[in-house]
Length: 48
Image 1 (cartoon, rainbow, N blue to C red):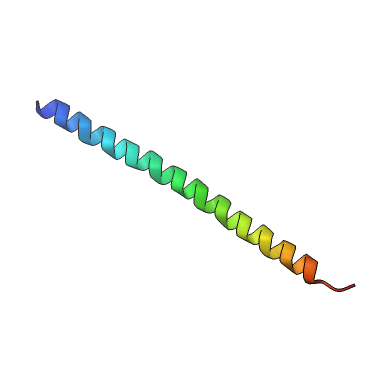
Image 2 (tube, one colour):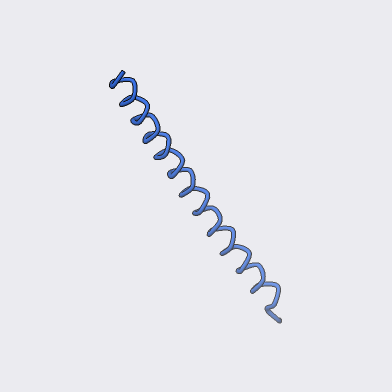
């Protein structure tokens, strides 16, 4: 019984780790998108 409970907790920890990794990827992509949108706005506002 204890080993199954331990396995459950280990699996939950591993799952949380994978979720956090994916959140980090999403956050990085979101920051890249914000930077690109900011650059696009600057280019559109640039008068020649």
